[in-house]
Image (tube, rainbow over all chains, first blue to last red):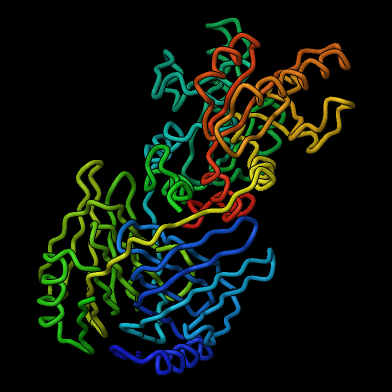
Length: 255
Length: 255
């Protein structure tokens, strides 16, 4: 890996370093005293303070304060950069075109700059069991559908077995949820149908059946439709994210 | 600001530097070749690659790959650290106690370490108008309530004026939404009541009225209840986050 850094550069030195790193699409770190303006669909201003600026090779940008795991300001990949002096301050402008968003970062002191060309082809693997998926659906029931309310998990249903989740929809109908970690096939559909039928007989009420899985196999789709059962696509990855973030702790609430 | 860095440290040198930074609760940056294990409510493994590790003074942790504005692994503030050698690799363990989550980061090469004590008391100000809040509610209607569907914005209602948002709830009832950027008072409640009354007369149907605002003033609460109108707390900050993230682009979807 090739990498470079400067300690306590002058603003002129920092400007040259930053321009070089951005033009070569290297990962860039700048630590210094800065002020940040954002103008997009809303707008914000961050007054002066010491922070870490991270710019990645794909043009994504993060401004990090000394605390909190969320950046205080950020731009997604694809930003276009312009570096110049304005009123004696070193200004880095990151522009996103669609939707139009402009992030201006002004430094009056730079303590440290670092740039590197990182190589990373490592695979990211998540291990999510059906039990993990069940926990995720109980944590965020709207993954099943809006207004879905879980009533019980692992509910025994006589000889038919155990329901993954029993709940009710926004109209008050009972809903049986069958969770599959892998693409759901005919067997999963028939299993769900047994649960729904048993529950209809026991309650004498309308009961809906929903398979939650990353996908439903082609050969099971006709059967699902014929039995008037439903499929809701939820990936193990989404469940991982819900479990990682924890209940009601969406990352977006901390931006 | 006091700061330190090392270029191409040995793993032993890196270990001493990292331990010193963590014990002094300095912001720590480590760039190197690493592998990451996560074990919590779900689990994940990130294979070897060159990345940036950021540890902040409050114990929050981020592992950043060369692209994407989201960390591939992260821990919220409050993590407890342990640094040691394991099978010749430098291992940094970040443990969160409640819920129990363990992030293990193994480095076999460290290219760069940096630590600093950052001072940042700069205020973060968001500028969000009532029009911005309206855009946010149209982008994410569930801010009003689950199942809410906007039908029109800025709808003219004869002499009564303009409705901020007209929509329907999951039961099909018409809902008038009145948006206030500041705490809503009696005047806002009376204005909403006029809209609801006019619309009831025009349609002959059930119409609900909801005030969306950061809070409702004490002196308006009785009136709101007496008129059977409703209040939904939405902060300008939340609207800013929705607008910044864009439609359907919750940060949490990118973890």
